[in-house]
Image (cartoon, rainbow, N blue to C red; front, top):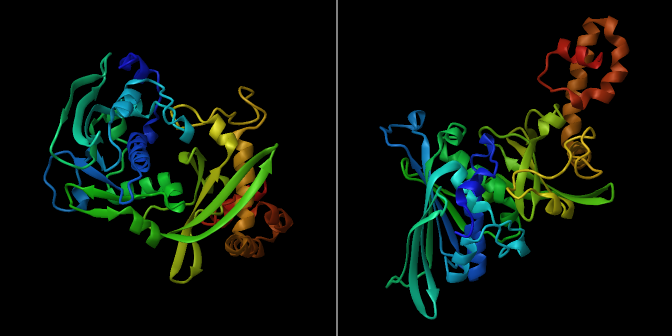
Length: 389
């Protein structure tokens, strides 16, 4: 490669909690390859490979060890292979590509194998090679004409490094939902090919397009706010309640999720789901896009070059805490009809406690202002103590 791969990978950072980021990079690369090929029947298949061991049911699932991402996009043509060999390639800069996503693969995996069928001058070729953590990075490169007359590319992310494997969810359903959350913008804009997640141990198959239709309500709340001369577009989607769900805010750049914030940390009152009716409930996924976020995203796409709070003066005159506070206010406004009943329930809880403990009557007015800052499942006594602060 046209860079020292060991140094390039070592210079990148990847938090343990971002253990799925390399997979997300590969899936988005596949989507973009399908767009480049103008393939109308595009597909992406994500195969989950687990460590070897006896499997009887979901209670003793072995850890995930590798992923295989397969697509029918344009493939590793000469131009795309040269771009792969070039660190910080600008080939995808028009669509927000930073040219470093593949280095994230080697942060979390011991080895990557690529096999790609592509068409050139009316003939089909297969290019294959290993991408590994050596100075050169590329080994066993082959490029030869083949009889298989179709585009097919397989990226094998092999042997999770233990540091990241330990933070990886086991369930293939969770992996499927995490991918949807990360690439939701592609589903929303109808740019998403058919995507399947296939567990090679349990033989479960998850059609993400179907999951999107069935679990994420098409109804959305869309708005735009301006804060310190920067515009932020906010889209709130309803997620039909699935196991281990929660309300989330996603900060995006260049059509990709960069990081998420648990809404409960901003509005503790929202520690539980919303109800449409007794048998219909949902959580919310809030996606925030902005040219400001596009311009300030870090090269590894896991954070922004933005001050975390007003105590930092490193980058610009706007900080992440302020942005989240403004977004939270807008969420409260948009979802008022769902949040108001929760506030009323919490307020009644305080009233009931004060009825039995009249010495706290002076806190009732204060409770009105702070009610959304306290989790609904908090005990009455803790509620009162919080209002006294």
